[in-house]
Image (spheres, rainbow, N blue to C red):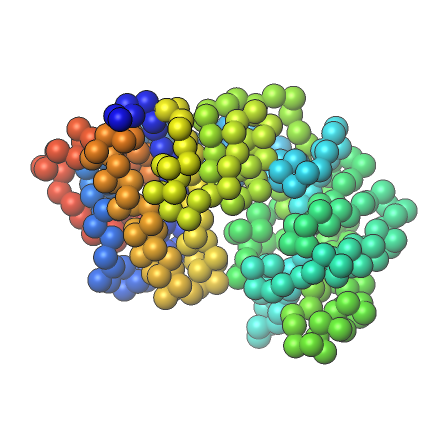
Amino acid sequence: MINFGMHCHLLLPDLFWPEREFRDIYRELDTPALERLLARGRRQAAAIEAESAEAWLCGRFSVAKQADWPAAPYCLLADGGAPGKHHWLRADPVHLRLEGNRLVLADSGMFALSRQEAGRLADSLNAHFSADGLVFFPLRPDRWYLRVERAPALQTTALPEAAGRSIDALLPRGADAPLWRARLNDIQMLLHGHAVNEQREAAGQLPVNSVWLWGGGDLPDALRAPFNAVWSGDAFAAGLAQAAQVAAHALPDSAADLLRASASKGVNLILLDRLRGAAQYGDAQGWRTGLARLERDWFAPLLQALRQERIGMLSLHAPGPEGALSVETTRGDLRRFWRRVRPLAHYAEP
């Protein structure tokens, strides 16, 4: 059955390697389906100047930037919390390691934390900061939330942008930054000698020696609903969908599974963030392997579905430092042979 109405948007964080001068990473990549979609499609004007997936999502759902892109209340919603009228920050457990004279951040993708450990650490933080009106909620072992009595004058760096990097230039900024940097120092001192971390180190595990504050904001009353369904493993995308009353689904393993599961003829957002962790931590081989799997599981099957008119349109969105590259492709576009297929490295050029 021809599905003229089904439009698939693929959001692809870190589709291009973040170190633009490292050209060798693209050598001998085998991504013919992706390259054909990029070549034959129509590049869209950058209506959303998004340098990150979070900024792109906010732009699509018409979420205004507060001090930060307000990831915290939407992630909280996806994790079963009730944001209410409070101001929230993500306060995720992290490990800071000393490399030379720099502190480098490792997020929970680099260590496992049990629900019991998270609860004990958060209990200690809540006892320490109770007089300040700060309340930590470890709704998931890897995602914690901080409720504050009033919105601080604070700009933060999103955790996906800080992971794997030195934190020196990424710490909170703004009029209230001195207070919050002092609080972060208190948190690090409290967690350094915590019994949970002593037990983790004795077991050869990374200690949770800090939290990373980011994504502060409160929940607006209503959102625009630009999609009929969102497919993702990302809490922020799921929370935005929930707030906009859009169907939110777990991301299937492949495009074939998604096409079997979806009877929708509407507009579907598919967030494919498989490359993100490897890009954050400079894992070139992991990034190449992840891209090969995306080619096999998503790009090639969706290109075939487009040719067979099982879907009507496919749009690729790759946020980056220069804004989002967005390419829209229909079956008719695939016949435009004069649009020469180029290697992926061509599209990575600034």
